[in-house]
Length: 225
Picture 1 (cartoon, helix red, strand yellow):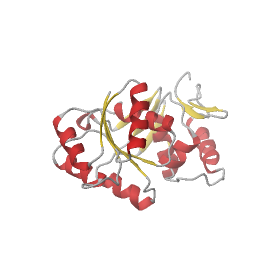
Picture 2 (cartoon, helix red, strand yellow):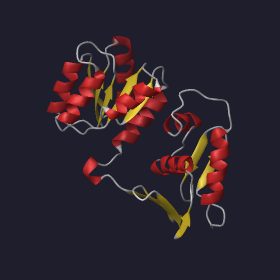
Picture 3 (tube, one colour):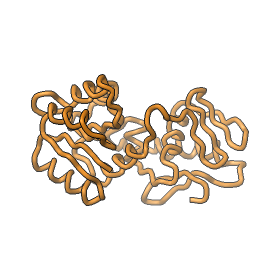
Picture 4 (tube, one colour):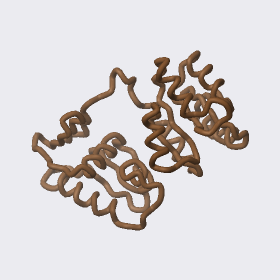
């Protein structure tokens, strides 16, 4: 996949670029916002990785400008600005994901791969299906084998995240960040308790268990996983 990387710190930029290229990606890297806009509007990329705090045109303005100009390439903000308001601002500016520094390279690679798998906006689905489990993102309903399942708001969000990552290992950190918007481990059993209730509603009484617990790794949803 061809990736555009905007990062002003030379050491960080080189490290990320090497890691992406080692994973098989082709990377164009730049240090200034204006250069990023030039590249992104002139070539087709699978994913944009954007540092918010760069010289001249900042990363947030870069993504806003690209969205206004019709560039819909998925954009991941990679930044030390990790507050809730910062994240909201980034997503509202047109970002598709947000990763706070310091970060694990394996997680960055996983998120880039996930963004790269997204269909074009015009083809964005409104329904998710895994085996006989169906989720309607518009009506906010869930059903399995035709039977309606009532979920609380946070349970719905958790299941949606799992279904969007069907067959993939989802770590505790990924759930805390993407479902609860926590950037730290609260050292509580919030995930375990929600997962237990979700499993009872989604799996109990049905033939195949879709939600699997991978001890020491996380969770995975899928048929026959």
